[in-house]
Image (cartoon, rainbow, N blue to C red):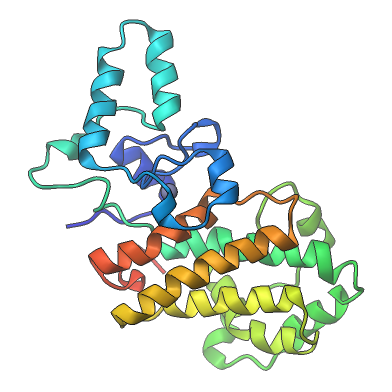
Length: 264
Ligand SMILES: [Zn+2]
């Protein structure tokens, strides 16, 4: 058994901090802090959470004798409290609450990274209008036409969030046509970064994944995030990008991530 769903709902039901923005530990899989998240892109370099460590931390919170200490521990551990799910026999809330790629990829990682490329490359190189025209004029299949992506407006780019104002379905279509759109831009560091993202997405959306592919996926994710940080040194690695590091282990334990999608 595993619990799927969006990140906020999963964090709520599993007793982790719902919005990880102010939590010191920002991940329900490992005990990473913000600084480590910006610099380390290999899962093996992080201390993994386990049910034993989780229970210890819940005990610490419950034993805290002042509200101040309790709140501090909650913030440090990134835990709100002991979840009811821990009472289920043999249920492991660390390993059986998988990340959902619809939320991780389509609602956060892909829009965020494409927005960075728009802001730092397409706008500055004068390709933004041509890129948007290519989105409008692309010969979509009848199925994809139902989720035709919107061109990216200046308002969307200037908004203070990581979103591109596309639904998950539109984002999926945008990713499908992205190789054709960036082909017109010629090869450069930015288009290479997006092509690597697509390689990762292709594996994550595959219904069958060989074990040997998992080693490649782990390396691809590590190199991709290093490349992203190199291209955008002022942009933060957001928690959803960090969650990518844990997906190869998730696939090894629970099977292809496309089967962990709650609703698509
Ligand atoms: Zn983590």
